[in-house]
Amino acid sequence: MKKEIHIIGSGFSALAASCYLAKEGYNVTVLEKNDTLGGRARQYKKDGFTFDLGPSWYWMPDVFERFFADFGKKPSDYYTLDKLSPGYEVYFGENSSLKISDNLEDIYSMFEAEEKGSAKHLKTFLDSAKSNYETAILDLVYKPGISPLELVTTTTIARVTQFFSTIRKQVRKNIKSSKLIKILEFPVLFLGAKPSNTPAFYNFMNYADFGLGTWHPRGGMYKVIEGMVTLATSLGVHFQVDADVEKIITDKDKNVSGLLVNGQKIDTNLVLSGADYHHTETLLDENLRQYSEKYWSKKTFAPSSLLFYVGFDKKIKNASHHTLFFDTDFDLHAEEIYDNPKWPTDPLFYANFTSMTDNTSAPEGKEAGFFLIPLAPGIEDTSALREEYFDKIIDRFEKLTKQEIKKSVIFKRSFCVEDFKKEYNSYKGNAYGMANILLQTAFLRPNIKSSKVNNLYFTGQLTVPGPGVPPALISGKIASELIKKNK
Ligand SMILES: Cc1cc2nc3c(=O)[nH]c(=O)nc-3n(C[C@H](O)[C@H](O)[C@H](O)COP(=O)(O)OP(=O)(O)OC[C@H]3O[C@@H](n4cnc5c(N)ncnc54)[C@H](O)[C@@H]3O)c2cc1C
Image 1 (cartoon, rainbow, N blue to C red):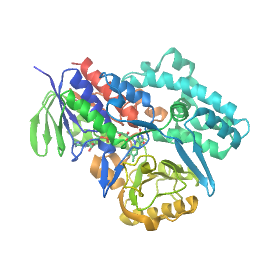
Image 2: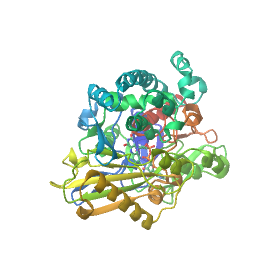
Image 3: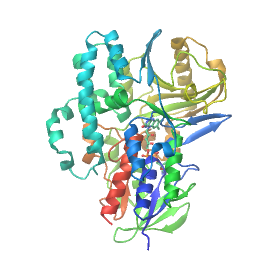
Image 4: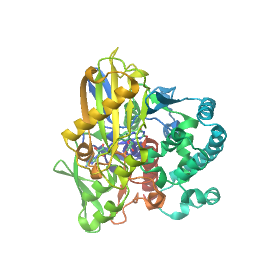
């Protein structure tokens, strides 16, 4: 008889795990509390506009290729990828922005034009970044995070100093231009921590950025979710939406024996949770939780965010598909996220206009705008604060890009801390999990297998390897391999 497994949640990690487990012969049922699949990567459609609710940067295409290749497939069997050119644009002030080309030679020229001699340093930096990428992405990140020995290899021993130095120190050693520093420190923000707190080894994110480029799945990131759901369905996975798991039921021997879903008990003796880790543990009796509230409160979480999805009734000028607004104090904003949590005095923000390169996301002559301000998790969230910050960034946007856009807003929807809690059961409303600082890396992250409940496993951005879509795909693979091994 086929062995059964129930998976809680339908984010990237849960979907990846569902495919691997179905291929392994399990009878897989995915239980998702929301009415559509995809978790933080769900889609929002309104009046002919289409928005990705969460992720929009498609980085590390090789990780997606590897995922689909495990099933004899290719990304192109499910969606079409376009390489963005420019990859993105960064604003530093009025009349001051740089566009990151999709071609490394152009990037070297841009660095050299900005700071004489910097291209040479960038080449050396990227050589190390590429070699770290190969070590990390081809090997280290696929380890289950069970033992510190997983990290000990001849290649990592040779790089040990990079774990104890930071990206900030490494970047600033040779590069002096504040613009170039901001560009080089930006990619590690995806890992959820400050550059001054992220090990230099993570410069592999810079290789992902400049070396591998920024891609866009035509139709949006949700096309990847749809592709994975199609693959999972073809492998026999069953999906249930509007299925809120309220309790993980255990027997006297600490075995999972069932789940309470929308008030009904269903029998199961194998559960993998792709829901936020902290929330999953609250579904257990207190004595069966591995981590206390104190443990969680001491962890460095990735930021929460204030998000706006905006339909504009005209095309926007002087911006790119991905545009970063780094015209204010990077360090002060980081301090107000991590050290002294408060609403940012002068926020950095990010905007995307996918309809600039993808005509499926807005009606002709109109633009779909997505705005993101990173915020401290757990911070107060009111509609007045959301409005105040919308006005702040739109005023800045208008000034920096020299155009009026506020009057062209047809509709806007906001999403913030309280929505992250309500929609995803997210701890303190974090947007993308637990940061990848040194003390929260590999075996120092929460366990993939519960140490207290038999047959309970975890996947997703709070486990190994960490935040982001490519790590979520990897996490699903790691968790399913451990389940298979322990069968
Ligand atoms: C605004 C934003 C922008 C981002 N940008 C990028 C980007 O550009 N590039 C990138 O690579 N990454 C990005 N990320 C990060 C990336 O989206 C996440 O790391 C990844 O999608 C997380 O996947 P996951 O499987 O861990 O969890 P989730 O997507 O959070 O899935 C968890 C699922 O569990 C469900 N669930 C929770 N509790 C229950 C319950 N009790 N019963 C049933 N179901 C439950 C939730 O509803 C949810 O569907 C972004 C994230 C956000 C929020």
